[in-house]
Length: 227
Ligand code: HEM
Image 1 (cartoon, rainbow, N blue to C red):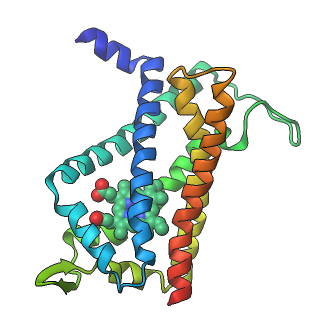
Image 2: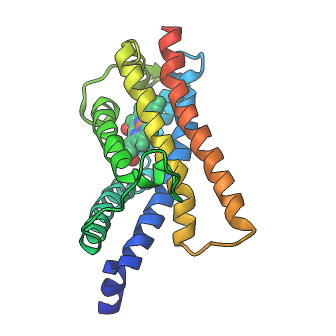
């Protein structure tokens, strides 16, 4: 057992935790986006509300949801430990000259900043929707004799405010940049570094980051314009 703890708390073990929790969160984002796109259906929110009801009451999804929160916290905690170790190992920062080209991208050098901004978004986001769905007194809709919480109405109401829409759209840019580096970095940590496949993983990562962030950003914008 000690070998496992030693492995998981070593620098390479922690990098592995970052990669695996990151890949799980990538999977979560894919499912979350495909579910959320139902907000754009012209059905008064019926499909989305039934989906949200299922996601909050089905026992297996409840377990996955607890895992999801645990992985988010683990991802954040591990990033802090790794950053502190890096700083301790290199008390003097690398010097960058303005305009000078470096081997690393802007996103890769600012993952901590991007992650912190996403955390701010996440706190506001969970308070607005997740908390309301679980603990708030939101109205219900009757679908075929079944009372279902009208989460669609909560989301629709929030996107009537332009500044809330702007906050979402800007936050999705942070998510996009975080994914731009995070996706390929996770595969690199897992050792999938290959002359032929690395450029492919990079291209898929870029495509994924752009599609997911634009897809998420589209929802508040379309709902705002529809009114
Ligand atoms: C337009 C963009 C988005 C919309 C409309 C949206 C909507 C929602 C809604 C309505 C819920 C509550 C669902 C429920 O409790 O059943 C929720 C939960 C959640 N959202 Fe989002 N979301 C968006 C983007 C994001 C992004 C980009 C992230 C991550 C960076 C995220 C992370 C989460 C998490 C972690 C939960 C809690 C899930 C759980 O219970 O396990 N969301 N979202």
